[in-house]
Image 1 (cartoon, helix red, strand yellow):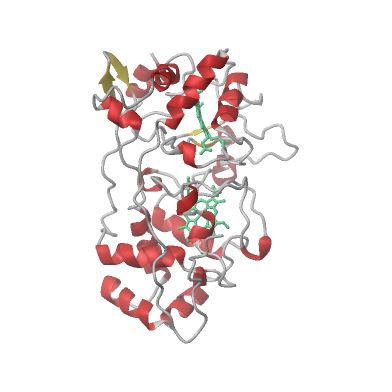
Image 2: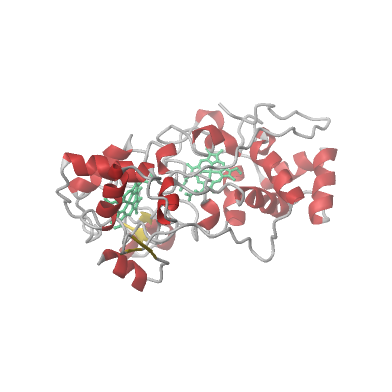
Amino acid sequence: MWAGLALLAGQSAVWAQGRLFANGPLSPVVAPADNPQTDAKVRLGAQLYFDTRLSADNTISCATCHDPHTGWANPHSTDTGIGGQVGGRNSGTVINAAYMRFQFWDGREGSLEGQAVGPIHNPIEMGETHENVVRKLNSIPGYREQFQGVFGTDVTIDAIAKAIASFERTVVSGASPFDLYMMGDHAAMSPAAVRGMHLFNGKAHCTPCHSGPLFSNQGFHNIGVGMDKEKPDLGRFDHTKDPADHGRFKVPTLRNIAETPPYLHDGSEKTLMDVVNYYNRGGVPNTELDPLMVPLHLAEREKVDLVAFLEALTGPVARVDVPLFPDGAGVTADPKGGLR
Ligand code: HEC
Ligand code: HEC
């Protein structure tokens, strides 16, 4: 029944063991027409992604918070940016962000290009002005040459965003045990994970929201997280001002989810079992709570199975090492790429 609902919503579906599922394998990433992928652009984007000189005090890179060693996210509930300032939300992962229609928990950006310029001037992330970062990078001959070669211009904020976005489009996950199972390798998932898959699509009804190849319907829902706080984060509402969006957050992808604890927009749940327990309780009551949020009455064994299924969604991501950075007369980049 739930798979049917998701199908009506236009999601792709596959058959397995004579049953219809709304989730299936990922197709290749599609780059926007005005920013085609090239190897040189991806290499430039990788340097920028790890270059601490994109921040005001030259200590923080994108990789500081989105570390390849910790699922391209980080193990902290919320993030510490420039000058030790702590932000209010858990960092999403860069893995498969290329497939998401909306970026950030509240979906305030549509494209990776639009997203990439945000953190640079966010006062508590990298705290640098766009003029200054462009000036800094233009003073580094190795960067100027690469921007000239790739974009035919000196360094611009637009070209920085395009190069970083192109790099991010290479950070995608390959076939997970779930995908192999769906392709007919029935030994790829443990019996517990298979039982968990049926719960995911059935009794636990996760599929209406976590549907399609990404395990996200690309929509926004209120599942109640943090709504019992004195001043809750209102999520999508802060962006749209539409009262219906109160407490709604983007449905995140569940691919490679085992790699990025803690969970939820505020990092409030430490493990996947904690998240399953959260759903089993039916979430936090509030006036806009999604009608799908009801107590699930899962047995302990069923919760373990559901977690086993979530763990079977992890596919390999190509390894990326900290690149060598071009240097100029000014400050040099942190050779460790801002990793902590
Ligand atoms: C100080 C830590 C920090 C730094 C530095 C940082 N980010 Fe983030 N990033 C976050 C947080 C926190 C979020 C979630 C914020 C939100 O949703 O409001 C996020 C969200 C994202 C997302 C969206 C993920 C999703 O699931 O919606 C992408 C993509 C991303 N960052 C890429 C980058 C890039 C590229 C850079 C470098 C230019 C960067 N980040 C620098 C902390 C950081
Ligand atoms: C009504 C839609 C909806 C349903 C049903 C739903 N989810 Fe979610 N899920 C979301 C939203 C929205 C978030 C992000 C909420 C937030 O952080 O405030 C989320 C977050 C998650 C996360 C954390 C992801 C991360 O990156 O931190 C996991 C894990 C998860 N869901 C698993 C499940 C499972 C398992 C089920 C079934 C028991 C389920 N979801 C049912 C909408 C839904």
